[in-house]
Every structure is written in C-alpha cells, then in structure tokens.
Image (cartoon, rainbow, N blue to C red):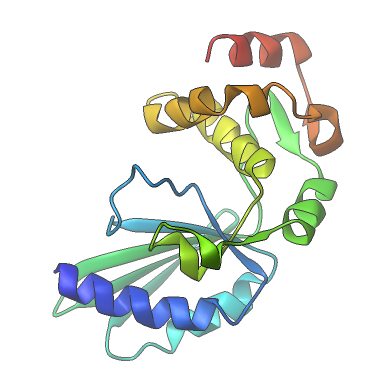
Length: 183
C-alpha cells in the first residue's frame, strides 16, 4: 500500500508544483509522511480538481463538500489516499476569515522546495501566521484534534503576535482571548 501511495504522491506533486494557486495546509513534520489525507487550500479548486481527475491509473471518486472537494484514490477497490481541497476555510463560533486573508495567504506563500521535509519540499505552503490561523479555526471546530493544539502551543509566541482583526471577523473577542489563553 505504501508503494501505491508513494507512486500517487509523486505523480500528484509533479502536477501541483506547476500551479502556485494551491497551498499545502495543516502539514506537520511530526505527522506521518504517508498519511491517509492531504489538505490543500486553492483559489482555483476547479483547475486543481481537473488535475487530479486525469490520473487514470487509479480509480477516483470525487465528492462535493461545503467549500471544495474530497478526491479519493483507489486501486483494485482499495482506498489509497484522500485529497481534501478547499476554496475557503470553515467558519467557527468565534470568528470567520475575511476576504483579505485569502488574498494575503496566496500573495505571501512560501516555496518549500528548500525544506528538509521530503513531503513539504514539493509544495507551496502558507507563512506561519496564516497556518496558525487555519489550525486555530480547526481546533475551535474540533477540540478533539489535539495535534492542532500542540502545533499552536509550539508556536505560541507567533500566535500571540498575530493581528487578528486584519484577517478575521471576530464575533466574540473575549471568547477568542480566553480560547487562545488556554492553549
């Protein structure tokens, strides 16, 4: 199975690398290299969906989700990998992302080809402050995903220096402050 994931991964990264409008998100060196899903944020999900759809040596199942697609890859009816591609991030009970966030995240992306992480070096990734806001929202929406809390805790000095009002419409500042303080 890992051989199939590796083949698929190498094929997809060659295609994705050609497009600067697709960012790898929610990745961590501590997470297994060949995990079951890979998350992307794109400002052109239809283009990226089309790239993935062309990989004919795998059976592909594409399903709509609220803000993008799940693209599942199978070989001989065995699940290999899911690509989760989103055009926007989920709102939560404390804040929602402003349009300026999506403009700035792509304008300030990082080319990770010099990374020492084999997985990341094939992609564009968000600057740390943008990645932290993604993980903060994920953790608010799913407190059971403790890996997001650990990532936030490990980068707390950057998290606490972000200009939240620049990128977020905050519904409840007191609740946001309390939530961040409890990380």
